[in-house]
Image 1 (spheres, rainbow, N blue to C red):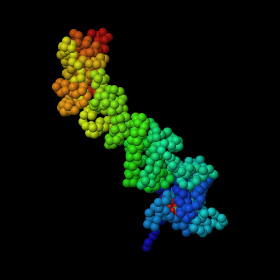
Image 2 (tube, rainbow, N blue to C red):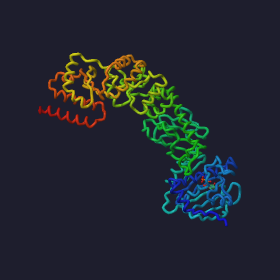
Image 3 (cartoon, rainbow, N blue to C red):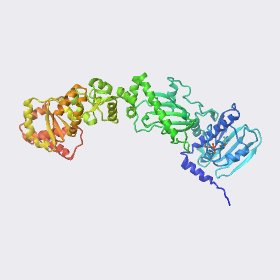
Image 4 (cartoon, helix red, strand yellow):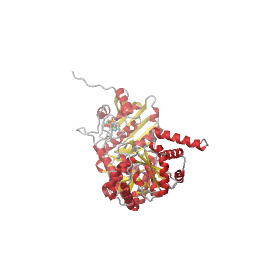
Length: 587
Ligand SMILES: Nc1ncnc2c1ncn2[C@@H]1O[C@H](COP(=O)(O)OP(=O)(O)OP(=O)(O)O)[C@@H](O)[C@H]1O
């Protein structure tokens, strides 16, 4: 014997409210959606029919439309059968003009209502019909006498604890949020709530004052620029608003998305590529699919294609901006450098923009790479922020140019520049190369210092460190620590020496390859121009020599911001206390 499934309406409502929709507020959207669809259907019969939706709030909420209405048979078939809809074609495909498609939207009324009454009269003829249903799944249908206009009126009576959902102050912002762009005039308690047109329609390039105001209203910021966007295949139009100031690159920007002019959400993700985290969009599309809750977008091929195309349009705008208003392009780059750098890793035109406009930290101050290159012929960089800060003052004092490439994406960008323009354009510099740039000391100073170094040799031996004596600026720096791990790169240096175009560096590299071959882990470069080092040369107390050398070593470790090992910390404590002891007159 065959049986038919029975449906427990309470169970279904519970499923919708707790697991599908994020809030009961969606009932407003579903009612608006049905009203708009009914008007669309009536327009097929009579293109000049009125398009009005009126809402009244009181203890009960009533929404009335001038749509197609339902006959008695349709009331039974469509309103009273779960999953039955008039918005699919004979083959079951969603009909494009309609917002609804599943045949369950009406149920969301029971998220806030204990009973729903529909009074409807079909544009196709027949008497008006009243349908009354409660949340346990019982309904009655009766014919209504009297003069009822074509269209449908839905009345909700609040269920216990849900009265506030039907109050004007709650309903008004919901109607305005969801329905702002709907192609029908929506009034609430007599006042029009929606604008009915998309703010970006008909806006010409350069006339975007209204769009700026719109951006302020919905996102709360004045955009750096409003870029019109369009993806024909998805029936998508809208605006991309560029944020005026920097945001954290990890921030996931969200977008305001409408589908067929009905709001999907304010915080929709995934519409733009990750690098475009400094842009927020408002779009309306007809061919992007929402998820079942209609609160986010279905991640399908179409959405992927849209994301790629919109990314492309924002990128093209940036390139155009650079051509037309280069100063503004520079400003934008400065505000959003990480996103743009990230894009430049795989996009040559962006790379040129970065090269031209983005300030890098250099020994010349913060200047773009192209400007640095003009002065120095090539970009010589240090791939570590601390190392750069340690070496920059010394390099600058010798007239050598260095670029700090220790921040995110810098190395990748410089490698890409070398790949495009040839290996001579950008090259990593080993700290030990700098050594070759420092002048040799006067022979008598060197001899005196060598003597002291042999007296205090134990201090540096303990740290596997060699001492080198040089004569350099800045005079205030007594010693500089250079890691010999970089010495491994000497071979590389030999290879690249022929390619360096800055004559000063080329000469130094030549000296370096011929120079030091220390096997120690580190080198302490003593600056004999510094007064303290000069006094060290004249000391005749070997224990004080050892103490001074160890103190200079630890100071140089701290300056280099290299991680302290336990023996460095021990040396720091020892030398500090011993110096203190001497200072207060112990020895
Ligand atoms: N205001 C209305 N005027 C005319 N017909 C309506 C109205 N509201 C609902 N209906 C009819 O009732 C059917 C079921 O509505 P319901 O909201 O449950 O589902 P839907 O709109 O078809 O799809 P979805 O679940 O995606 O919203 C609709 O297909 C439509 O035929």
